[in-house]
Amino acid sequence: MTSTTALGDERLTLALIREMLATPAKLVLTTNAQKRITESRSVVERLASGDTSYYGINTGFGILAHKRISPADVDKLQENLILSHAVGVGREVDAQIVQLMLLLKINSLVLGLSGVRPVLVEYLLSFYNANISPVVYAKGSLGASGDLAPLAHLTLPLLGLGEVLMPDGCKQPATVALDQLGLVPLRLKSKEGLALINGTQFMAAHAVHTLLRIQDLLKVADITAAMTLEAMRGSATPFDARIHAARPHQGQIESAENVRQLLIDSEILPSHLNCGKVQDPYSIRCVPQVHGAVRDTVRFAISTVETELNSVTDNPLVFPNGEVVSGGNFHGEPLAFAMDFLAIATAEIASISERRIYLLLGGDSMGEVKLPKLLMSDTGLNSGFMLPQYTAAALVSENKILSHPASVDSIPSSLGQEDHVSMGSISATKLLEVVSNVETVLAIELMCAAQALDFIHPLKAGLGVESAHAEVRRHLAFAEADRLFHQDIQTALNLVKSGSLVSATEQSSGRLH
Image (cartoon, rainbow, N blue to C red; front, side, top):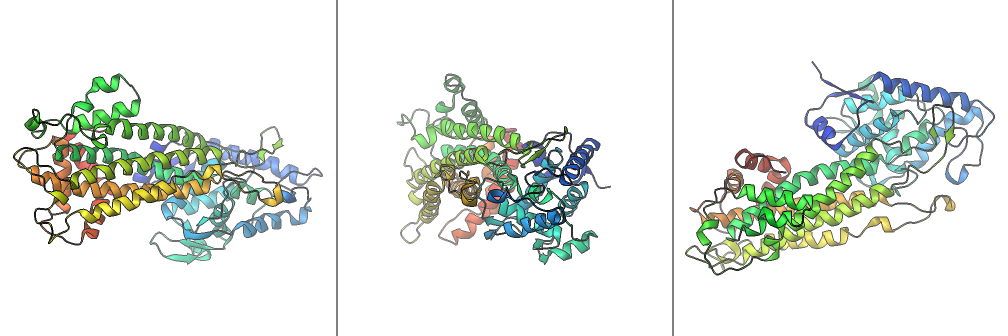
């Protein structure tokens, strides 16, 4: 029996969306949601036939808002709106993100302030439930007046236009999808085209997608840092709970606790308590402060994004008392700021990770066990892990450029009517690149730290670190000599992205923050 998730009464959260993605279920609307949609639509239909001008219902758009449209042309106006605004360019947006766009658009419409017909929401539900993704392009939105171009492309297939990605990944004309769903091309009515393309769902979908990945990366970052600490025979003292209680940022406390948890029962740490080292470099010693600051930034971003997920970002809004009120809820500034901040913070995970990689390559001659330079015994003939660090450095450098905030820019459009925009769509696509780069840098640290630990064995690292190392070795063998490290990086990256590294580690260390 197919399970269902009711939309319309419960607040959407990141945690709920994570559950929905993990165990897909058919979306249905609650009775309250259906009632709100129906009542909102009745207001629009009453006003559309009257003599008064209402923006988006019987007028043009943007700079053409003063132009009254005759009742006979109101429906054509909505179709023209979609056609004229479907000007996206660039790469195709990942199907996972497009599905989130559909989910978030539906959730905005069921709040009942957009004035669309129930049948329009049913069409969106049909596409979502069948896992059919309209082909949407990544570039073209200014992040204000809504994500106009991406949302126009999201809408086209409802009208029998444009292309879709079917569940098997094949691209097909939209008419194929409609036939499979048993639907005919939708004919938009007054206000509906505007309701579909006004909104921040392109930005918000990217924010949700990247935040879910960043949440996973926070655990991976603490795991790789703990592995490097053990391999470099560093000190656990900087992770003492008393230090972090004296500066009680929540993220800092969580990260320090994670590392302490991963180091439990370490044989390596006691083996060098009386060595000559006084302090470790910052990239090891300040892990809680840096990783923790990222955690706190994520907390801020989640608060902003979850508010957005449960908001109406349409314009104008249709209120139950019959008033139609124009405003600017489509402006993406809150999301633009949050995603620019997230890019800056997330980039720092890779920045400090790359420094730890560099430390590992420097080797260590402390004590009886020697950690060779470049993490390989026979260098000269072999380059060892020199080049993976180059890749990490390149990605860190790219992230510095991608972390420049898009939200500080604005270019007027619509002949000056839309004279300040958020550029939040650029914040969104930049953040996606930053996250991908960070995942790869952590994957490189993971393979380097695992290689280094093999030189320290048979002394055992902490239970959590040993479990992480064992998971790496299930997929990647110790490197005796140079080999195709590109493939090793891809394998390690899969461990980072799939969740298997975290899952294996938590089985022995306990659940991490």
